[in-house]
Amino acid sequence: MTKRNKRIGALVALCVAAASAIGIAGCTDTTPQEQPQETASEAPRGIPLDYSGFDPENIMSDAVLDDSRAMNDEQIAAFINEKGEGCRAGRVNDQDVPCLKDFKAVTETFPADEYCPWGYQGGEEENAAQIIGQSARSCGVNPKVLLVTLQKEQGLIYASGGMFQWFSYPSAMGYACPDNSTCDPDYAGFQRQVYYAARQFAIYRVRPERFRFRAGERVEARYGPAEECTSVEITPANRATASLYNYTPYVPNQGALAGHGNDCSVYGNADVYGYMRAWFPQ
Image (cartoon, rainbow, N blue to C red; front, side, top):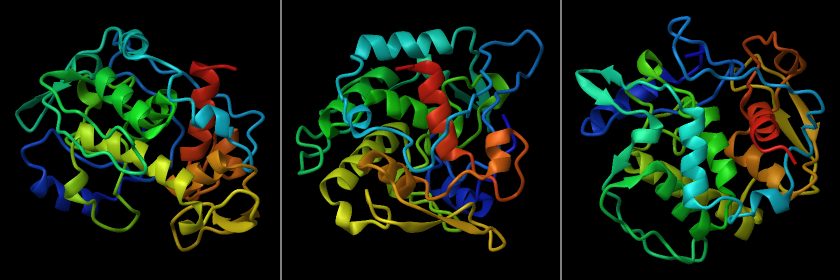
């Protein structure tokens, strides 16, 4: 996979807690999402992203973020199968790591609440598309955004073979893995990552006053988590853009957008823009 800043200490601590799972992580991405191949013939192949037109104050509209019916389970599965064509399973710590298109799990039931009114009805042998679809519908979040987040955080849409890591699925959405801190093992695992990430976007919608980034309010945003990284003032144009910053609180700098970033280049929100544009053009 591409070189990333993955908060290694946090992940090692979480690995012990999540030993029965297939891994965990998903933190700050400091490199562009060009997915290299292990060999010249290996598939699937990623795509170079076009960041032209990126507006740090208007990354996504509320209508797009809230379109929970944008794809049904069959369409999500078809998308995963198409992007993962040619994927081969990985092998990490003597355990097989499946391709996303082949992933299946016994899922938990989560109770309904004000953020996800339908909760989650667990089942036997649910695949990734079913988990993404049910989470999106329950929490009122576009499944396309969840798919993009899977790629942005762990590269799971295009991952194959040696690209898989021990943390690929347990921290699939980068949820509950703050910078410079340990990942929360209570949220380890693919279903929990997807559901609680979707629920987090719903919390941003229902309780915006709890969070630092809010639509129409000027705020200082850093270019990266390192002490030497500077900041810039932005005014998110809408709730969706504010939500993306609350999830990944960094603005991509000009080097990142030009494809030659530095230690203060965090690509997360630029990658959301780039993948939405490439995969789901309006």
